[in-house]
Image (cartoon, rainbow, N blue to C red):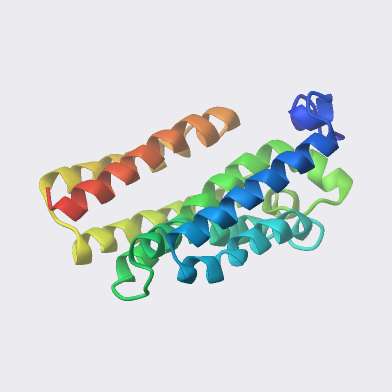
Length: 214
């Protein structure tokens, strides 16, 4: 509630009281574990891992500027979890791990862009982030390198596992949007939200087309 950018969110504004938030979180957690159990015992055994990492993440901002990369690691669990929900086995998970690697660099890059908006607040309040530690220019340059690596990972994913003209066309547009995202970094909300929503749908389309070989 001290950060001007987040003062209008539901809990700081009082729309949702802390006890209500805990109740919602508790019910969601029960549904999550039930869903994991319903899929397979294998998924149930692994289900505490994402929850633990998500619980640890907010506290890391008090200790390290590399929280963006850690959040990317958490996000990388999504394609792996999707694969395991379908297979309940690690066999043939190579493409899922490549998509997870893309997720790390992609999310770390755009989370740095988002953190630029909190640079002054983070520095004044002792919250750790790359923009607060390095300054806007150096942090954004690092974010650009993260997105370059993310795109190269998708190129490898296409070259090894996927094929087809539609897939390569979507790969091209993903690259264009990643580039454009860094042309609009002065508009943090636009670059962070809108550009990455489009990228996420294009990545989904690329994976779907690549699996079908179109």
